[in-house]
Structure formats: structure tokens, C-alpha cells
Length: 157
Image (tube, rainbow, N blue to C red; front, side):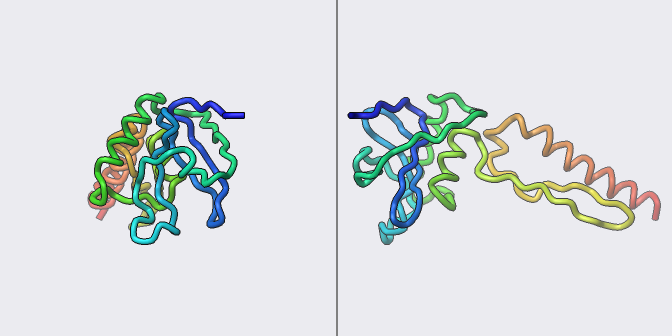
């Protein structure tokens, strides 16, 4: 029985080195990070057939309850990164790449730093802020809070 996938599906297949993740783009093709067993090309993005992606193992679809991007937009993001080739910023894993395509963020980290008499929240790393406009107010607010805290400390000195 052949399984039919929908464009933009997050595909997962078990492999000897761990679960392998990819984004289904239609016509039995997947964009994914090449596994570490691929030698010098491991970690690079590739467009391959479903058979090459799964290596004859079962394929499951990982659901995403909160899709920031439509299925078509997810494909556009995946193809844009694929076309960057080796010059593109690498992803730590295939799962991180597919999540970035669908949800807009590979990782975001907020940290609290203590300085002077008060604590201020600063944005340490927000990857994809340009492509995730919903997070822009959070980042601007965090930076503004940090600036106000520093101004307050300066005025009280």
C-alpha cells in the first residue's frame, strides 16, 4: 500500500543513526539534511526521492499544531535554503530544519541577566526573527526593558 503525503508534511523515518526528518515537497520528493553517514556532504540540504530519504524504512508524519507558515510557504522557505547551498547557515539537525520551515524558528532563547541593582531580560538568541513577525514585539520589548533598566541605573548613580 502506498502512502500519500501532503506537501509541507514533516516526515520522520527511523534510521540506524537516529530519526531522520524531512519536508515533503510533492512528486515523491523530500528536502532534508543529509545524514552524518553521507561523509563530506553530511548536514547539507538535499532534494531526494522518498525512497532515498527513507532507505526502505517506514515513514510517519509528525504533526504541527501551530503552523506559522502555510504548507506552500513552508516549501518556499525550504527551497530558498536548499538554493543557498554550502553558503547557507547550517542547521544542527534535520528536525531543526523542518521545524524552521514550518514554525519559523529553529531556536529561540531568552535569558535573564542581573546587572547593577535590578535584573533585565535580554534577548540572547532569536533565530528567524525576520521570518517570525509575531516575535518581533517580544524582542523589541525585551530590548526596550533592558535599555530602560540601564537608564534607570545610570540616573540613580
